Image (cartoon, rainbow, N blue to C red):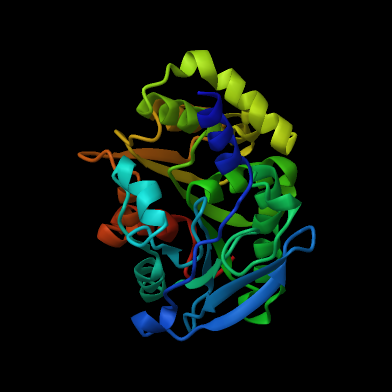
Length: 307
């Protein structure tokens, strides 16, 4: 058990291997620019800007943990072996999402967060919402710096780690979100909850071991599991927010996302559940499958005519 916990702590605490970018917007017939810009603390970030000519609306996409702006090739090794036991051994390709947003009249900025894809390494490889929050802030500053987006209304499409990082950025720099019109946040996740579920899937009593695992992670990263909690950070959200989640996701519990939703201190918020699946990846694929509710949220809050 000690070896198992050491391996879990090492795998969670520090990024050891980046997943590749195997797709580009060109596959969907989209014109795009390769762009680079700094995070709020100067880490170089790499991304794509997909223009929608004549539009005055832009959506910034923030990706999940372990993914890149293109998605995750979890149908290939070594990612397949890691994710197949939880039912997630399939590819997630985000290019169709960008095509949908583009065709609906949105510019899209999709980029790799620090330590992922082609973006810079930082913080000793430690992955934490408080650090990735600086990338969210950097992406907002980049959008505001572009002359062709000067009057554009801004929305955020922030999944999993991207959602956690967005919540953390709102807590750290609320003024940076004063003119952000809407947030769509699929499947934010508390590290403590997902590690408890991972222990349970291994047949281990999480109640007896989670604190030991927490201490191992704290020794490696200087951060405890609760330092990463998006439940508390959700209290800083002031942007109209749509959350959604696979209800029976084997890697978490419904009460985790429900607690975040309950903590968002504004009336203009919604939460909906994806039913009939235990596969987390189905939540990431939901937008391509049926984007109607998410597009309606963006359309409602991002006016066609700009700010």
